[in-house]
Amino acid sequence: MVERRGTVATVSGPSVFELRDVVAGPTADPILRDVSVSIPAEGITVLAGPSGGGKSTLLRLLNRLDDPISGEISWKGTSLDEWDPTELRRQVAMIFQQPPLFEGTVRDNLCVASPDVSDDRALHVLDHVDLAPELIDRDASLLSGGEAQRMCVARALLTDPDVVLADEPTAALDTAARHTVEDLARKLAASGVALVWVTHDTDQLRRLADHVGTVVDGRLTAFGHLEELSESADPTVRRLVGAGQ
Amino acid sequence: MTPVVASSSTDAAQIGVWGLAASAILIVVAVVVSLWRQLGLERSMLWAALRALGQLIIVGFALQLVVGDDDPLIWSFLWLFVMLCFASWITAQRAKDVPRVFLLSFASYLAAMAVTLGVLFGFGVYEFEGRTIVPLAGIAIGNSLTTNVLLSRQLISAATEQRRVIEGRLALGLTARDAFQPHLRSSLRTALVPQIEATKAVGIVALPGAMTGLILAGVDPLDAVLVQISVMYLVLGSVATTATVMSLGISRELFTPAQQLRRLQRTTG
Image (tube, rainbow over all chains, first blue to last red; front, side, top):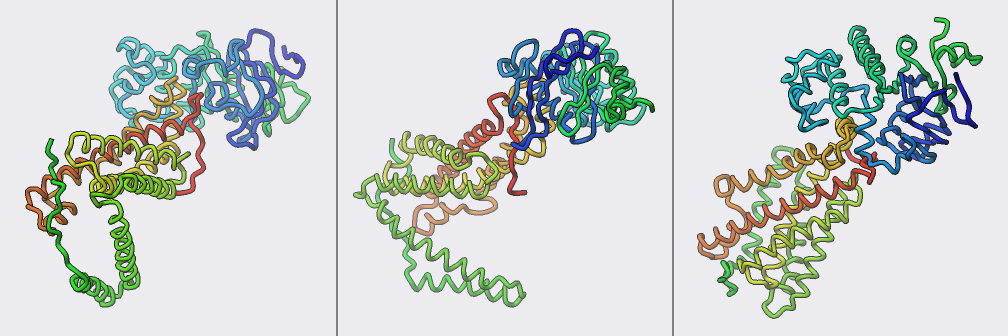
């Protein structure tokens, strides 16, 4: 059920992130304006909206790759400013649109996240993301796009995150690889890891979303369960969530 | 410890005005080649030759104020300070994208001076006097400047072009230092390898300047070699120290206290 506590968009149930009056952007001219929202601690929350609207800007705030210009963000009830950024980022993993591959093999890449990772644990996370064990000694630069993205998910999972932030992680993948990564997202959500997933692909949104936030021109225009936003009175919101397609 | 180079003066080679004029024939040769091959470099060559002449004559007169046995050392230190400021200014001009570049480069040159001159004077390799302070510092700073500019550009390029990879490491919970370490290492290697290669090739590919100058001035070639070797080591030590301090300083400037990679406004390619 969609609720409004003051001006804060929220849904029922516990939340992981609380944003209050957040203004943000890479320069003094903000992209994101006056965003107040509680992001649920369970399931997949999809942030949808046109390109350049501020979805990625919002995502980068959540693991402090950037700080807001003004406003307050808290994680587990504590302001992000009070968290050690390295500790926060190990709990709040981030998957990028273009998977950042480090030099060396898949094993070398996994070791960046967890230097003392055992072979058993490394093979376990590879299996978790449906990567064959023999890939562990392959040069990471030789992986296909889908394999590279899944390797990045495996790498992020080695930090045992509570939340995974995903910034259009399938935008550069073909259909088969896209579905594999989506399946992986569902599997992660089912295992108790909350996901915040950015996309402007409405089909994907409808396949994945438990909750949806629409971000247009830097403002959070709607937030709630997918079913509720599908019946929104605002035609822009209905279009952004792919209702009636 | 007996200094490698005695403080007593040697018989200097004096080429005089006529000798200088005769050597300028070589500039005429270069100009003729430019005219013959239609390179269009004649004015540039003449200007360079005249400018070098003017600059070095001024430096020669100025050096007379500091290299005499009775000249107070304060003048040498003042000269050294001006050299440090000027080198830092040149570095700042050539690496404008680096935050607080003047202060960082000043600190790096100062550290290099402290280390290299500290060793050379501390162990009595050279006598601590104006005649040695200024030339040794000049060689060290001059060679370090090129490396510092190259290194600064390398690090800024890495921070902008490899932003995705660096943020990928930060997002995994690495500290800024660890996230930037591979780029720092790579940039340092790129900046230092030319100096190391030059040190390896010395004497085989070309006779180095200090040694050539001493031999021309009538110093025994073996003594000249000893001086040259110490100068090569001075340069290598200075370049390594400068590069290390500069790279650590730049690395700190590239990240916020919250371990975020700053966005730099690039002014150069």
